[in-house]
Amino acid sequence: MSLYFEAASVLTNAENVGGSLKSRIYDKKDLKSTPAQLFALVTEASKWSGVLKEVVERSGILKEERKLTPILALLLTHDLLLSKRGVAAPATHALKLAITRHKARLNAEFTKARLRQGFGTLQAFREHINSSSNGTEEAIGGRNGVQTRPVRHPRWIRINTLRTTLKVQLDTTFSEYLQANSLADVVSESGSAKIFYLDPHIPNLIALPPKADLSKSAAYTSGQLIFQDKASCFPACLIDPQPEDGDVIDACAAPGNKTTHLAAILCERRNHSAEADQKQCVFAYERDKRRAGTLEKMVKLAGADRVVKINGGRDFLTANPETEMLRVGALLLDPSCSGSGIVGRDDNVKIFLPDPKATDNTTASRSKSKKRKRQQTAPAAPPPELVPVEIEESPEDGASKDAAALKDRLEALSSFQLRILTHAMRFSAARKITYSTCSIHFEENEWVVFRALASPVAKERGWRIWKRSDQVEGMKKWERRGVWEEGKAEDEQSLREEERQEVLEGCIRCEKGTDEGTMGFFVAGFVRDSDVPAPTVKAIESAENDDVEEEEWSGFSEDENQEAEKKTKVNHGVAASVKISKKAKKKRNT
Ligand SMILES: C[S@@+](CC[C@H](N)C(=O)[O-])C[C@H]1O[C@@H](n2cnc3c(N)ncnc32)[C@H](O)[C@@H]1O
Image (cartoon, rainbow, N blue to C red):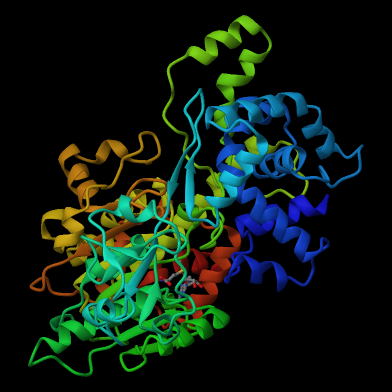
């Protein structure tokens, strides 16, 4: 049974390991399953996940089988219905029983899904899924009769202006390509079609058909082309470093897509300004040494090493904003997050998980056939949110444990993200900050933004949201903006509606599975006026002592407190850890 737990662990990337799916599997030393078997299950189940998500939800099994988490249900259903060898476990194993006793129901839902999509035979359905897979298609799973609608994901390519220009690429690599009028024209084409779409929001970004493969082209191998999702280009585009911004920090840099994008824009702006400071550079922090190695390679390949200085193995939170980096005017923050915008966390594998809540409507209906009829004719509900799950090694109460674990994880992540953001706000010369995640969760996105704006450092230093009307043209034009989720914010009453709207309008969101062809993503910018004097860290510390928001830090686990305490010791009294160090001091004094 370890096969399914191991597959679940790999798909959710619970250990937050970098690299491709294949390398994550083949490099794993402690696997009980064979890597080939594991890789096959993970890729096949991902391919079918748009369909299986719906099958599992409509069957209602997650509500009945408390041992099944959404991801386990998906993997087991895959093997039960689609694998020649069936579920790879002894007949009496609890999880095997939990899935096989619903075989008839799952089979019936699967057949209905196939017919709804217009495939008369399983063979035809298989061919369709195989031809539209390779992670290039996103199926919008539905419930209550909403048909699964595949949305194809383009292959986004950023032209790296550190090594080439858009014109040169259009005249060489893409000289035989036709320019499409819309993204839809590109995504409907086959991988071999020579067609591209020039993106209207991000300069030097083009979209190719989903299966286009330029990985062996000279332009790619020499760093002239960079494969980068459109959404991931938003932060560098929004921060738009100018010569007068001075140095720029990329606080959480590896593998380095945003770092090289920042460097490219910085050099372009610099080349257009006669008085530009030729020493202006990007400081890239990456606390993980192994990932810092990848960052270094990416930066070199992109030709960005002349402007990027890598602080490999260094934690951004240990950078002293008062004594270091005094010329830093802009900071790009892209901290670790839940990755829920890219479920499966792999460029080539995307998985759609059943929503445990979506079973409510269907389980009740199964006991009585009359009720079932009513259920099927009920109006369609909106497509459910994709729910990333934590994997339990021995799940007892799958769905509710998942929800509780997710809540805890989001709380811890958002506290960490807030820390990174408020630390960035302390840099004396900083005037611009972008904060981004590839998460779809309000807790990691808008809520971090609202809490940061309410923090003492933001108030003292005059940080405010980067309004939509003041953003660069491409970002201003982007229609999908921040959202408010009722009931999730702790202190919602204190926010005035207009203020809230202005902040939300400043926030930018991307959703996966839409015709816009992006992954799920969030970015917000912060600015402050240059005439607001930067108070010293000491002044801020004393303001915070007057206005201690214990709850701001209450999300930390004991481990994080210890980690923060350790940091304060090497941190020369950096204000980022003020509240933690107060607690730590209290601890030391007792
Ligand atoms: C979401 S990834 C960044 C992706 C990157 N910006 C890009 O576009 O390629 C977050 C990275 O931040 C690093 N990180 C997390 N916390 C950090 C910290 N306090 N200081 C420096 N790096 C950190 C993680 O190791 C991880 O590599």
